[in-house]
Image (cartoon, rainbow, N blue to C red; front, side):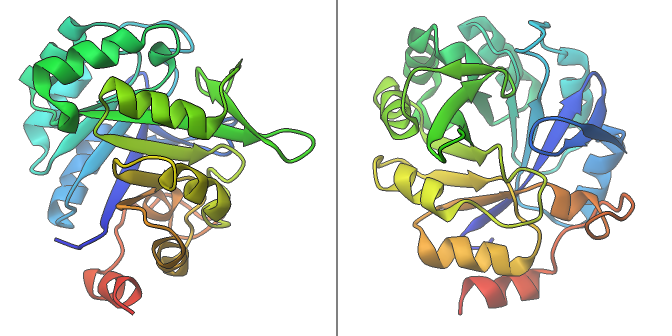
Length: 254
């Protein structure tokens, strides 16, 4: 296993995989279970599934598709998408997922994280933060798939999540997501420097050098990748893939 984890982040809409650009338009990718089979063959270390419209549309968790995914998958799994209660978390873990990801529902119920952390341990929860720059270039915090602006500053909210019991933080740049232009290094550093828990960088990775850059310039523990494993190249067709492990080792251990 690589020292810095490389985690494909797969976006669910209903029972299909999609890929978004800056949290707006999305393209159909394919069937999540078939995609898991491909990642099994590619010997990926970890997968993350996020139901991107579940909280926004206040939809119930699709436990059926999660069961199908878990039954097929050989690697550790995490899931995020409108997790509201400890009972939701229990059922997701019973299905076979190792971690849950909580974003929107934490803003009005931090006790949810506290309850789950007390019951399952901090290592079971990833606190997710979505950030978009305003007209003046200042970072603003958003929930519900980028639709609701929140009053907290990103680094302040990251500390709140840590204090409530998350074991990791996923930080996503909405402006960079799906862009292939690289991670927002300044944003990631602002979170990493303010918390003690591991941080996962997300949004913008388009080539191996972007992974090398974020690892060298920040203290992230993991890099989340989306477009890079869903397409052949930018503006080209769907091709589920994963970077060659030897090439990953080269950029991570320079």
